[in-house]
Image (cartoon, rainbow, N blue to C red; front, side, top):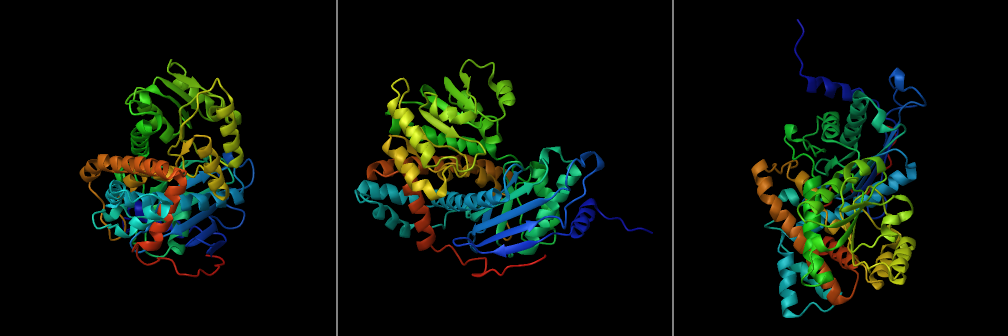
Length: 481
């Protein structure tokens, strides 16, 4: 007589049989660990007959753990790539992981007493230089911050040898089960969680979880409502982003200015977050003049071609940035580190030397890692001197990560759906208030807001009790898993 076995058990048993290829764990300067692995042995996975139009499927994984402690286990997304080179995929994982550390620690700070501490210092007139702002961090307490929202930074990229959109669902499931197996073998218990990002879905996270089903600390999150998760966090990301922008409009454009009266440019307008931003701009905020751009121009025309309030701008040559009369530019695409010193110089030149264009004032949005790290100081200084106020996306886009955080982790229980709904306006308001306060203080100190934000989030990790490191101080190079 055969014993009955549930489907989850069968799939988990299948994951155990997936042979990983080469796996290595190293520790680049400033990172807890960089895990790199081929998800399938040898030449890769044999595809179904109708897809054998080239080499076998191989998927290279990069898991960049930037920072994780016993009090702040990491949380960050898995990004699916196809056109990038292996070095670009690694750089993207590492750059985004560092950005996630800033985003997550800033979310904890705005939910703590830090904003109140800063306002009291402003009222007392003691915030007259950068070090005065940073010294206030010693007064921060995380006692009132729910543990679910205290996270470190990580990011993963999966580089597919074939276009992942053409793969059968069962092949895609095997890929993410292999990712789960890699995470199970390389991540210390309690390190943190990987979740949904560009190109991923809640179903992918379920497959990855099955690949590491023996782990009690649940290294994956970002499930759909059926699996007990929040679902798509994009609307909450958009909500917090636009509240933040609305809160600084009076500071930048005058006390009577409103978001609805300004010309807005939105890049990535048909992505998940971009779609939510566009919908809320047009409906909730009543924006009358919206410029949109996206590499998927067909979907762009389908979504906005009939609107008399929307102008479609070709994605080529940064036309949205350089050739449209915007007041606020909102990057919300999947482009990685596109703002370098060269683009900043062109943007500053076009806007200050073209009398037919109105001077732009605000460049901020939910796009991950907008600035090219080696040139971020130069880039933001060029924009600042041209009168363009910029702020790192990590200060503005914490709404989505807060949704996933609410699913709980390891010994921290999940929040109920009602608790998450009750927390949503509180989270958006805190992110919005923090964004406005950064813009205000940076203006008083006459420094780029991004420089202020980076200084605060860096110093916070130095002076606050954030727990012990989860990863060992040295990570040996591993051969085959």
